[in-house]
Image 1 (cartoon, rainbow, N blue to C red):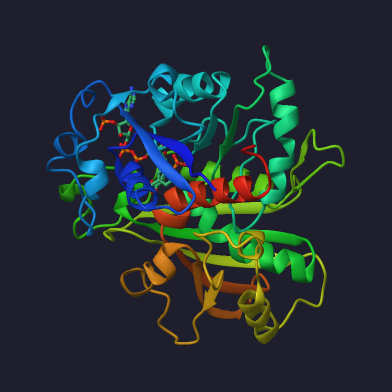
Image 2 (image 1 turned 180 degrees about the vertical axis):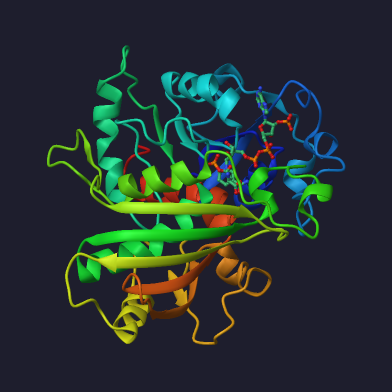
Length: 362
Ligand SMILES: NC(=O)C1=CN([C@@H]2O[C@H](COP(=O)(O)OP(=O)(O)OC[C@H]3O[C@@H](n4cnc5c(N)ncnc54)[C@H](OP(=O)(O)O)[C@@H]3O)[C@@H](O)[C@H]2O)C=CC1
Ligand SMILES: N[C@@H](CC(=O)OP(=O)(O)O)C(=O)O
């Protein structure tokens, strides 16, 4: 089958560079156009990222000499799909312009995540939310025949909703959640937090992050109504987040405590077994980027750790450890996810693979 031609918006940034690595040699997608800001357009990709290519792997040979273009639909006429690693400012007008020009937009930006007709999908959790797409199109005037926007979640939200979904499926509705995050500096893009601010330090504030974790979790773990026209958010799920920036390059660590509506609560061993056995639709569909093991449960008392565990399975799954009884809630555990992989680029790419497999790119 011919590959689907795709473009990347914000191709030079932290998330954009990960898109390049994942898409340069993808079995189903072919890179056809790369966009960035006007300070990069007209340059070859290698010149535009000179001094700020921050990946261990080199720039793929077939990308080095591609000329960067403006993020305008007329520059992407060969593409059927675009992956967006745009900042939220430019994303607010650029992403809908691509949707209205009949491209399928897979976005990392926060702008449309809580939109009532926009799917907010963590591919390991809720790809069933794609079914709102026909309704999303019907709310637009003129209604695009092919275009849509699908978003993926904030990177810290992504890391917790995967184990929480496994627990919710197995043990019924969750009651309360407390989460404290230790977030990597790559979450702030490049150059991000200055070394002077983060070295030998912890910054106990990330603007807007706590609110995003609290609202996005309720949407992702919620359902969609029978005729696929509205999301059913978990409005009665109590959730509170504390967010901290720590001197780690990649990988968000999150300390989670959870209680269940149904009592008695499951035991530690039952929780571990459910997490280990959790599977997702991307695996069943045979998606190229799906992890073999969605949740890797560590029994060692000092794992997961970002440096040791963030690249397991190319950062496509979630690591959980320290599962234990909580004297205040029911269960507590530590989750680690790669914020730039499953927290960003891998989620978008896997969402597109699922959409392709389910016929949404036809
Ligand atoms: N980093 C992470 O862990 C995560 C990030 N996200 C989200 O992904 C998005 C990208 O984040 P990140 O990669 O960290 O950001 P960066 O700042 O590293 O990259 C931003 C990209 O957007 C481009 N850009 C900026 N302004 C414009 C413009 N006016 N027109 C066109 N292109 C523009 C930049 O191009 P140029 O190089 O030319 O300036 C660059 O390619 C954000 O919305 C972020 O919130 C989501 C989850 C996790
Ligand atoms: N704010 C996250 C990364 C991010 O960009 O989040 P969002 O896509 O929700 O703006 C972090 O700093 O680690």
